[in-house]
Structure formats: C-alpha cells, structure tokens
Image 1 (cartoon, helix red, strand yellow):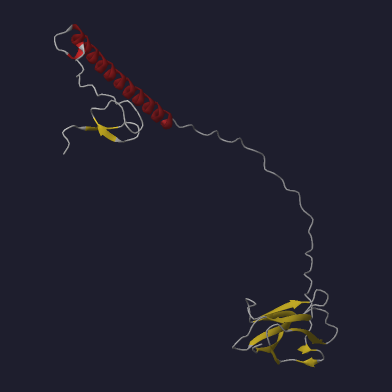
Image 2 (cartoon, rainbow, N blue to C red):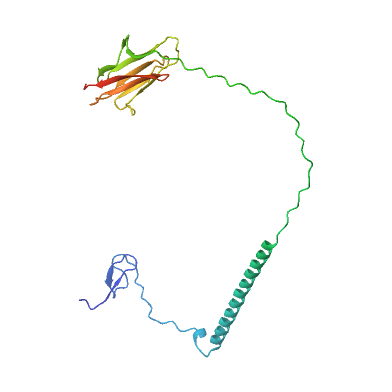
Length: 218
C-alpha cells in the first residue's frame, strides 16, 4: 500500500500522486481544497446588535403574515355572504298582458289525393343459368379458367336484370363480374382449388336458381 495519498484529476479522472501539482495525463493543475471554516456572521452571535435587529425583524415578519392571513379570511367571508344574499332574492316574473283571441280563418277543405295502387311485379315463369345455349346446373372447372354465363328469363317482356351472387362471399375461390352492358351476363373466373362444391345464384322477382361449381386441381 502506498503511503502517499492519491488524488483524482477534476478534468480527465486520472488518479495521480498528491505530490504532483499537475495531472500527468492532461496537464490540468490540481486545486487544493481549503480547510478553513467560515466564521460566524454577526447576526448569528447572541448579544450583538445585529442579533437583536434580526430577532426584531423576524417578529415583525410573523405579525405581518398573521395580519395578511386574517385579511384574506375576512375577504372570503364577505364574498360568500354577498353571493348567498344575491341568491335568496327572488324576482317575480311579470304577468303577461292579456291578448285578444286569435281568430283563425276557415280553410277550404282539400280532398285527399288518392294513393296510387302499386303495380305488382311481373311473374317470372322461367329463370335459367345458361352456358351458351344450354342450361347449366352443375359444372366442373379448374384454377385459371374464365367462363361466361348468361341468365335466360321468360316471359321475354321482362326487361329487369337478374341479381348474381354466390356462397363464396369473400371471393376466395372464384369471382363473378357482371357485364356493364348486359346485366344478365356474368364473367366467371376460377381462382384456386376447393375441396367442397360451391354455388352461384341468379335471382329475379323472388325466383332464384342455383348452379353447383366444382373446382378441380389444375
């Protein structure tokens, strides 16, 4: 163990002998801590004039503080009393002056407009999903195949277009794209293999037909 104590450089943190006046690493001058004890001020020494003046100032500060607290409490009490008195005062509403009765002129009687009888929807006698000219109720396809189907409606006087749908709600296995120029025509595109058969539907005026879709492996 070294008999000469070491000090720590206040700049780089290097420890070196206390006999050195500068750090051997960075050259920073070592500062010697003063061991002197500060002398007491006159205000803290009992029996002196400064001590008496300090005690007197402390008493006056306490008295002023108490006066200030009492003034604040009185001001709060006055404000609360004033608000309570204002709340208790009730103002009677003025009685409205009497007005002459209003005479409503007689309105001419208006005959109600008859409600038109809604026209019943036409009756669909035949509704088929067709591939070409042949009715299609069950077919087999594979991923990547694109087919076109159309709906046959009878009687031919019905001009409304069918509604296409399927039980593949998320379009995971196939998609149906309705022709923008002919709503009775739809493009079928197979996307991927399905272990279980699926269905697509055509519906018009309450009549609904279905076609089974079987998707084989490519």
